[in-house]
Length: 372
Image 1: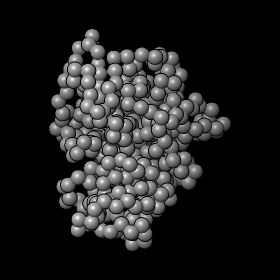
Image 2 (image 1 turned 90 degrees about the horizontal axis):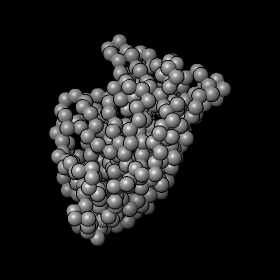
Image 3 (image 1 turned 60 degrees about the horizontal axis):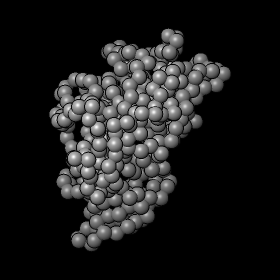
Image 4 (image 1 turned 45 degrees about the horizontal axis):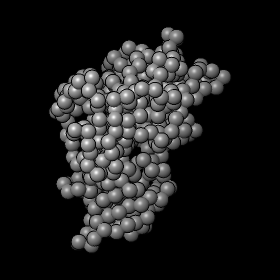
């Protein structure tokens, strides 16, 4: 795995080849108390040494992190709303997961990842299997490559709909449950905690990347979990499982406790737009980043004429250091923070001006573009 700065993570979709390299982790005895230090600035989690943390981090006891979550009850309530997805094309087949998001008397909408169904965009079939074994033919309502979200429609109504939660209220250490169909094993339930928030994750092939402002979890997520549900202790959907990091190179392997989920508040805007119009939008800052820059921050190579950054007066050559209070370490973290915003909203951007001009704060009104 390649890390740049403290937050950038290159991850792989959970339906195919993932990443190369890896990181080492230490095992601890289950009988010992598990304590961690949570960064006050980034909410990333670190192992606590001798039960203490520096002033910049908060000590959290994880020994009883899953105490109070009734996994059996949550699973019984949620699994009827989570489906298995099978995609068949002339060149092969694949599987994934999804959640029933909306239903009427005659049809239902199912949310999943774009990478689960993208091979069937031009040809092929998509089948959805319900908990009771019924198999339904699905069609694509719309998809968004940038956010790795897709919406399917089935011509069957009155299906059990998943309850939608509020991902902005999630905290590091909260217990969570992942539900999906890893390796085609339908209705698989795993549990864990929220390991980190606002984790910039990039996945996908060149030119088709998805940038996710991810919820990181140690709940076991494996190939086939793509598009499945990450729910909180009350069984409400807080994230759409999308990617994992692995220690293998070349082909997908199992979970190593580093799973990434698209926060539902970010996904919901995209989902609702797709259901309403068949398309979705993304916010635009109006900058092109310097891909050769290796320092801390995201360097602006040039501006898009008439877009938000130019109108706000940000000069080319500036280095973005912060967006909405979040530290920017590189272009990936900048893109993730921008795409976490709403098109047309006004955000606060702090830049280091060129020619040693010092730090300056700008208020930028974001533009809007139709996503892929």
